[in-house]
Length: 483
Image 1: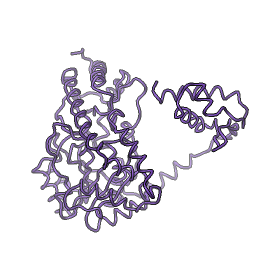
Image 2 (image 1 turned 90 degrees about the vertical axis):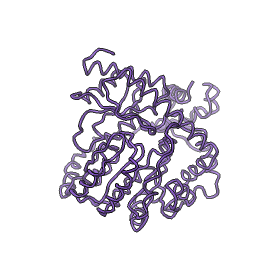
Image 3 (image 1 turned 135 degrees about the horizontal axis):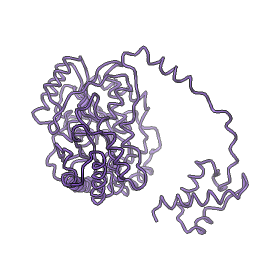
């Protein structure tokens, strides 16, 4: 039996059994529960922790577990209606009211109901995560001298140096800040580079989490159309800088989310030159470099590596290729802007947990790290091929303009006139969760789209079954027979 199911079953049994105990009465010892229910010590510990979180059990170190006293009557419900006026009044003077819309992010974070195939995930399936290597790294990190001391605000020097070497030649640890993942780094960058009310240029379509950051900061995202295979169009980027006076452009030059595009070699120099002429920064979100597929060939360097003038503010992270809980990333820049980035980072976060930084160092320094990267590259390639073949065979009416050699998903265009929301709902009823395309656009989208992730499922069989279920939902919404 899987450990998590054992925990749930034991917790449910104990929840009923403990009702026979009086408040404050001591419960059976862990050893007794292990022997009685034939489960592991870890299962007992987790089950008791779950009951303690529910307020049913109180644990006392060295004494055992006790039935918790009954909860007191919370009394009348609180009246928070005043907040509606306060929050509206607070936003009134702003040129661009701040709005926090997390729907585009939550769709990739929310776990689907049991039995639903997860084509909307943003992270590797647990079977692809280096769980044993991470556990070993965390154990070694915990034994390091000073592992629980306060770290330097900028991050551990050794970890900053490791990130610097990955960004490109010439970067040093002094130009890198360790952050709590890529989302935190993007938040710091946008807050540092643009005042509330300012325009910020973004690729169209682009990552919804970045759009949410911008709007929450009171910024005005301005879309710049991109080619599905070759990235942002330099001519339109130059026109957008001229028309808006923007001083920031956010880009994903490698395996862009959601299109999978790689910025064309001839466009890289143009993007940097256009931004430099506009006196603007380019925020490079290099989230997918370690999600390369086995058949990708040599990768282009980071934009930051080709930028001697400090135009690029670079963001990267370990999270995507390891685990959603290993929230360790980096923010790199050159020149005076680094001081502003550092100030905002320190005010917002103080520092990133030292044990987590130590564990990240242990992980990337172990022999298992390179083996993990090779395994992920091979598996992502196989999954991409399986999903591409299934979509082309069973869903020929969905356009697949570009098949990327990196990242964790495909981006498909729906037939003109398709009700995207209805299709997403029908898919969920059919047992497959997909990400709608609308949140990826900062303005009106040219057509309906879906983002189909192949990294968050258990394997290729689930990909095939998920596409079959999506065929069923397409038949329902598009009104066509199965092909």
